[in-house]
Image 1 (cartoon, one colour):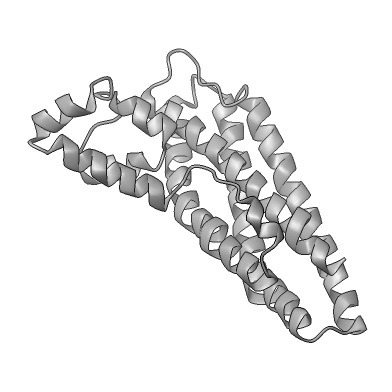
Image 2 (cartoon, helix red, strand yellow):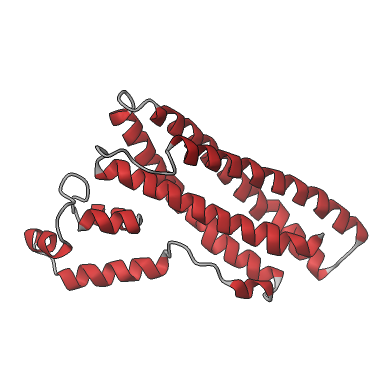
Amino acid sequence: MVRDIVLQFPKAADYFKGQRIDFCCGGAKPLAEVAAEKGLDPETLLADLHKLLKEHPVLDVDTAWNEASSAELVEYIVNKHHRYLREELPLISQNVTKVFRVHGEDSPHLGEVYRLFNLLREDLLQHTAKEEESEFPKMLAYSENPSEAGLAELRGLLHTLEEEHDGAGEILRELRRVTNDFTPPEHACTTYRLTYARLEELEGMTFEHVHLENNILFLRYQ
């Protein structure tokens, strides 16, 4: 079913929008049936989806980063996790806002979901911008030219970054609590379900992001 594809792989929703494929009200149809209705080649659709999945994996943890250089690890974090946030947060925001406006009266908890998500979005975007503009360059500069003063400065910066990670983690815990572990109600439409799926994916990606920084990258400067 088309709706099952977007629930398992939320990025597919944006692809389907581009193809004018209804994954919400008309989502309870096999992909081949929808393709026939639209005059599209189902094999081409599948190939595009597989390519999209390869470019935007849902989650993948590469243990080899323990052996990578700090420069390689920073590049990976920026190109995967920071890029993910820049691309996905605006799209998740559209979903959260739409579901809140349409269903907020019947589901008051969606107001809290809206508030928490927007707080998280602002925190994450400010945090990642600061890392790219200041903290990461200072780490890499220290790796090239270590000094006691540089290390002392980095330790203070890393303490602040870890506190910000803790703050994001607390917001995610609240989001999981108010959404009943990202479990939509029985009556929820596909867009409602997609919103929860995307929020859960954001949680998983953030946990991987924080793990790479707190448990691998930052330890190198402590």
